View 1 (tube, one colour):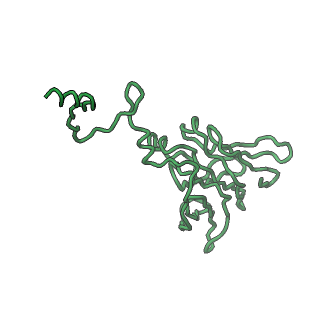
View 2: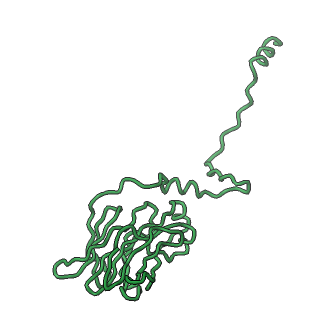
View 3: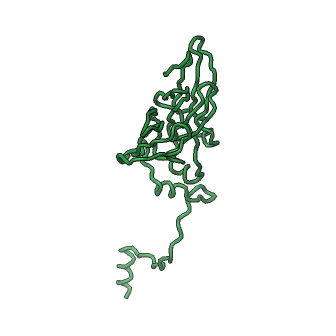
Length: 212
């Protein structure tokens, strides 16, 4: 819980409707402002957003925070695609008002559970103030501290696991249209097999031979 000028900054984790960032009065605990990490309507039905780690506070009091993903299955992401702001993003908030200064979203419509939930780092590269952040997508990002524009990104690995085994292929199968009875409609085949005559029982074949 970072604290600056008697203000405490903290966040909830992922919630239905989106996790919230709060600025609390350090003396009384009263809420000075709050910021919703999910503004996409899909967040009303799917938990997501929120911050798992502390924010960074810049020299001018700007609060930089990384948000988690929208915990959506691949079927939902493919059926109703959208950016799912501000999940998988690093955002810059005015420390006094909580107003959004800028955001950088690394992965729109994430259904891999990649997040961008690590604590941002405020530093300088070549005399330029930047915010460095990363998560489970396998990249490290450097963003301009004033504008949020991407300065560079570097691949550092591959995320090889998720909380769900669902893949886009499985999701497409699950999203196949259903009939009135509720069963999924089979895909049309190029041609139907020729109907074969019904097989006779062994006793019927024996009677047929005796009658010859």
